[in-house]
Image 1 (tube, one colour):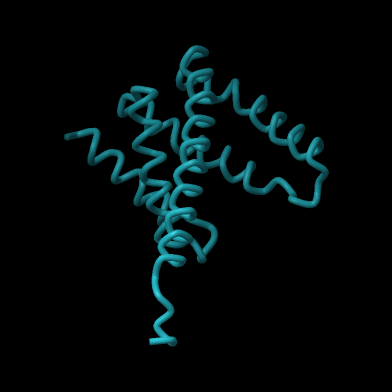
Image 2 (cartoon, rainbow, N blue to C red):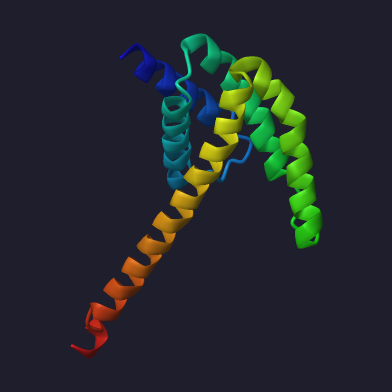
Length: 137
């Protein structure tokens, strides 16, 4: 229960410090799910969480700042450089093994999120097709 409150506290801290005012309710829910997922998967202690999440916030902000005007390869290289830059910093908090686990679990979460969003979009499209056009009634 103690960890639950810590994660809620951390989530509220992220929401309060969000730099983009257009953060939607969906983005906040996704962020909360991400924090809970990563905290569970990495088995973060309270001390580790207090050090990890602010560092992760810096990491995430740098990733979000990567220009979309770059070529695909330039963008991938820039993202890789940011990950390498933070690898040592994360290792100081998590150790080498859990830092590697972080990068794996981060990718897994993002892949699951994309799958879920695609499934929701397909479901919405099917629902729209199945609804009769009310104007014709």
